[in-house]
Image 1: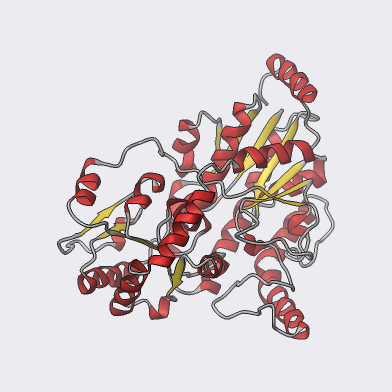
Image 2: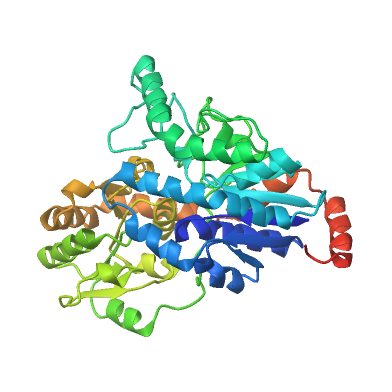
Length: 433
């Protein structure tokens, strides 16, 4: 079977789909990954054929323009980007379709697969990486710092969802999607985040039930597979400089604003101050080095990247933005978390980690040196919290979520061993279009 996988966004958005691609390829399927060329090497390392969409410059520009600390402005910029690239993804994937021998897989906000399902009848699966995409009145996801909750009166919940759809989603997502749908001869859709976003042959949530319990008003056909926990370079040891730094003293604290921002100067400045005040040693993780001061105090170092699977278990604590990838990797490592959510799914992920008893939260407006130093002192001294971290890490030790997701997608999309054998014979005889 030919499996077309489309994804966009930061490392945390893309790497889980690389993991899915590897799983499908290991089962004999022909996989093609569509993503920004920034991620070409990740596909190459996984031996997955790659189709570049957009440019590396656009990738860097996108996250350089994303407003740090302004969730509405940040999401508008991301929405604009996804609208701009949707047609390109659609055309690139359509060119690789083998009728009757193709399935597609896409992330939440990439709509090309669902469009191909309508225009060409290509079976598709939608993979949601975080629970915030599932709209619920019974247990609403936290979409901004202060949002409706389970106890909020139903009338207010309905007003909140209506306002969000009417004044934000309609202009930023519905309008550009419907413009493209008109070009493709498809009818308009309304309130896409209410139900249309889940209209696929298979809907997979890449998180476990104990992290986000399914609600009775979630889509009935959704399957929860567990955290993907794919760590590119997981088998690669830490650099010599980083290893030596870690071994030179007590366990350090790592600070990450996520790979989806190049404007976190204030975050890293406050993090450095927190280290100086608390006496903690610090590791600053930043793909965009311009965010880091040119001169760092003793006991603080900057690195561009390190595999979380190797780094996080060696830390005293992990301070991060609450992306689902960072949150789940920290859960697997059993490390206490201080979460500073900024936008997207981060507020909801942070709330869930706090409810598990393994994290504390500091909002961007409160993220200052003394505040962070005090929070880290409490976090690292909390023995019951560290025990809860270890318990959750044990639950994630043998996670096989990509296999579960792959099984679910193949089953729901009707791909059987007999189907696969037939596809392999045809693929061997027919060149790729």
